[in-house]
Length: 92
Length: 145
Image (cartoon, one colour):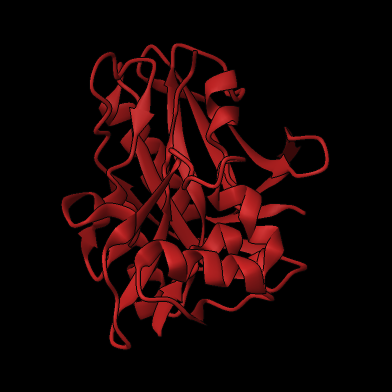
């Protein structure tokens, strides 16, 4: 069971909880687990096809899962997963 | 809801925007939000890592976002939003700003014309309309951290 840190913008969908215990043996299973607990999170984390949105990055500890085994990265009870919204914009 | 901004934080954001001109600056701001009142106490700049034309675009390194959340937690503050500048452009959010907007955050936009702050606005994503709503800004001269 990993712990998932919810970014501030999404805490309104988790009753203001900043972290949630998740079930699952991988990053993807953990994220699905918390989205099942708080269904309003789904549209902010997943595309309609179930993939993690391109505007969302996932860290395990302080490493981007893209440099690990991506969504299939294994987690343990000590693992801390962070959901990170991509921040970008501009005037035009 | 009115966004109240501590004068020091306001000055930090506008100074950063002017120093970065003609390129877009970006940073986070932190404070308190009790559901009735939202107050910015601290602003901290981060690097614009957008590859390409930084006069019209900004991007934050995910690692900087990761640390912004940690800074808020460590200091007992709430991460309230993001500020960025629009060099020689109005302080109105673009389609690009809207596309990547997230719930809850206040988005402060600083219009900088010829190197000087022209106008500062703040916006929040309306989840019912998927559009930005402008929020009023109040500068607080007396509330120091």
